Image (cartoon, rainbow, N blue to C red; front, side, top):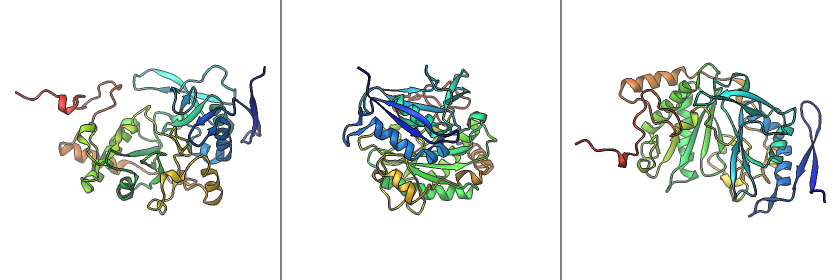
Amino acid sequence: MASEQTILTVNGPNGPRDMRISSPNRVLWPEPGLTKLDLARYIVDVGEAFIAANGGRPVSLQRFSDNVDGEQFFSKNPPKGTPDFVRSVKVVYPSARSHPQLVLDEPAAAVWAVQMNTVVFHPWPSRAENSDNPDQLRIDLDPQPGTDFDDAVPAALELRKVLSEAGLNAFIKTSGNRGLHVYAPIEPRWEFLDVRHAVIAAARELERRMPKKVTTNWWKEERGERVFLDFNQANRDRTIAGAYSPRALAHAPVSCPITWDELESVSPKDFTILTVPERLKTVGDPWADMNADPGSIDQLLEWWERDVKDGLGELPFPPDYPKMPGEPPRVQPSRAKKPE
């Protein structure tokens, strides 16, 4: 018996492509009963904005063997059977090893990824042609236990002011969960460590202004009921869910770009794979002009150097990273040896 399948025609820069979706009725989100075909149709509907935000970048695919409550894994290298129109680029990982990583250049490539059971798309902050130099500064505002989306909102608004003072134009999107992601387009002139230091400088400035509301403390036991400014998302091979990417959460939310004017009136639950296509038709894409005027991180790097001179140096790196110069001990404070 032939397996069930559906063919979707997907328009793109090289003309329409007929894309096969096998097992189209497989339920990905059990709570609302949304299927693999629903997800593929969502990607078709938002395809232009999705590729504008995530295309042309190395991307990691978060894939699920069944539904979003089941087994998952990340796919970076092109799997066997990748179509000819889906390219890859060789990138360098923190280990100094290099491998090819997928790049999506048109909506049909994202639909192919859905056929490969992708739910969440994680693009790099750099372009495929210059993967070592980010063209986006990203700051993840992550509410800790005892805080929520409403706590991230005032932090994001003040962060916008901080970045503006540093000469950067900030854009914002919901994370798809409880947090917010703030982006600033930058010229691709700095490597990842410089951009990480710029993020830390901005985060520390925000922390000085809102010490009871936000924190840069890496160790969870030290964060308290504050919004964590996740500076480690600025590292090489660290990514967050892309704009217009679905999330693997019960109600099928989307990490959705919004305007700053909307921020205080929206709920992240407003944006799902069922509602975002109509939003794009009526409201448009708040990130359409994001790349029109990329900025410089020179001012933030001056703040970084100032803070270093004042005794505020490097912060911890992710545990899978090699030990980095100037990094403090990777020991949970409560387990660190006390001086005798």
